[in-house]
Length: 127
Image 1: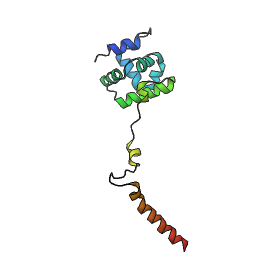
Image 2: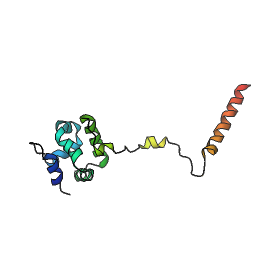
Image 3: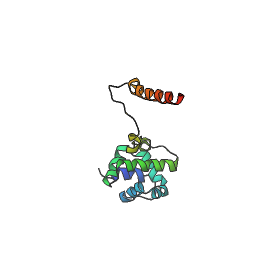
Image 4: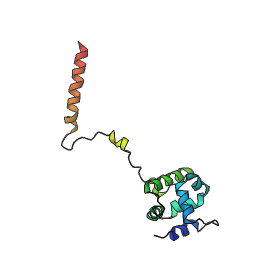
């Protein structure tokens, strides 16, 4: 993929013309992106998400980093963009806290031992 199509779309309405390296820099640096809100709005709003991802990949920008840039710019501009609405991946920490029951168990089977333990604890404190 050549960046020409992306740059033509991004630069069309503006006097200042960005080159591919400048646009990639804006994707990495939120301060630079906020300094060029028109160009960035054109990139995130008018360029197809697949082309955004391909463009970013050519400059070593991974999809999660691109999504983070889209979210940061959306928060700055108050606009919504397709890449900014992609669900955030769960971190390893968050998924490690989720208890997953084996497929052959039901909730009743899992909670029954817990209920017995709780009853035994309560019986100890009654005496």
